[in-house]
Length: 251
Image (spheres, rainbow, N blue to C red):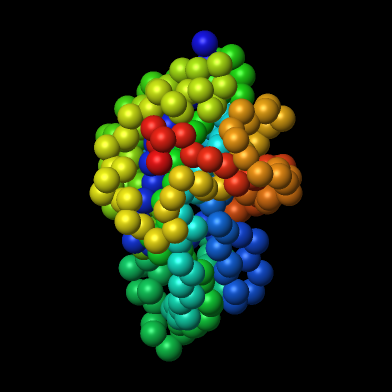
């Protein structure tokens, strides 16, 4: 029987970055795969510069996400002080943000950006192995999500997780059947979130049938598959989406 790892993500603010060029940093409607793999990597204690481990995460799992609520859009006009390019090109990297800002103040530059956040967005995320033997057992990931090595957040460090992720292993012949065996304890707590009801958006990858009662399904390319974490390079994957009736066990 196939195994699935399911967990919840909720916070007052979340930011799932899209393609960002220049000052405008848009956000997406659902968690990017790079964000979820980064969250799993943080839980396991995998560092960004560990290219081999990051590649195993990228190639080892498939993902589906139920967006229970769309969240409300918040745009933030952001100013940040940064070191000049000549300082960044020195022989060593700044170890901390404090070290970067320790250079003479008159040499610092200021960059401007507009960033997008979602307020009160709420998701159920599912992962399963892309192969028969994924690099990290789902049970190990589930335990680490409850006791992470590094702090977990929703896309950006300024967006902490507000509730326990309640990670759990589910079994079923398909994702729909597996989710009907889930047991989450936040239904009553979050039932008054704006936009929450018996329907939601399902985002998934792969060519398997969803087995959900749904509206028309669409597929679009999404550039959120991490190719090189150190250089922030991403590749495209195909993501499908449809409005579905959410199983009552995960509403």
